[in-house]
Image 1 (cartoon, rainbow, N blue to C red):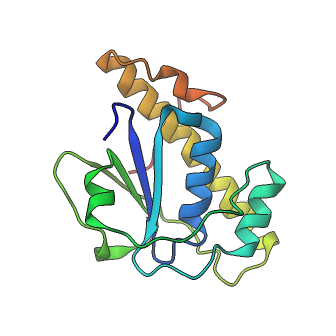
Image 2: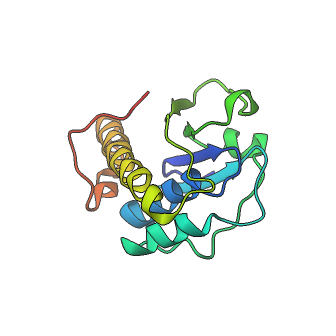
Image 3: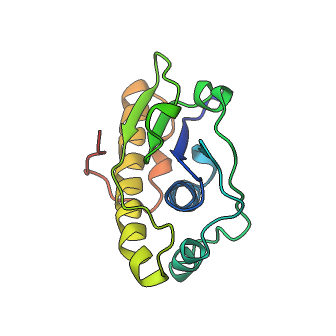
Amino acid sequence: MSDKPSVLFVCVHNAGRSQMAAGFLNHLAGDRIEVRSAGSLPADRVNPAAVEAMAEVGVDIADARPTVLTTEDVQASDYVVTMGCGDACPVFPGKTYLDWQLDDPAGKGVEAVRPIRDEIRRRIEALIAEIAEIAEIAGNDTTAAVSGAERGTTAFR
């Protein structure tokens, strides 16, 4: 495990919300935050409407592949953000768990996915700000993880 903070995004199929969240975090924080995403029952491919909606804002998730959630993924992450995986996500002490209630983009067209995408981006910006603030308090040099994200917002718990 690296010294940089790590975030795991989890949803059932790992084909929409968690992939968009991982894409935004990679895009906005660069290599300053380690990013993972997984699903309790991963789909065969990422939702094409999610891929299209993300491409509209300059984030390419076309090569992303749904992966199965493992205990190791959770253990290796500082933050675990669930998006509808329910009890399938193991809980370990010392991790920060966030549950983001977001509409599921499965089976929806790009028009319906855009507002979900925009809400995910807003929450990612808040999460980056929270991680940067914690790192700043701890004396780590992760404050640059804010690259382009808004500071002063609050992550949803």
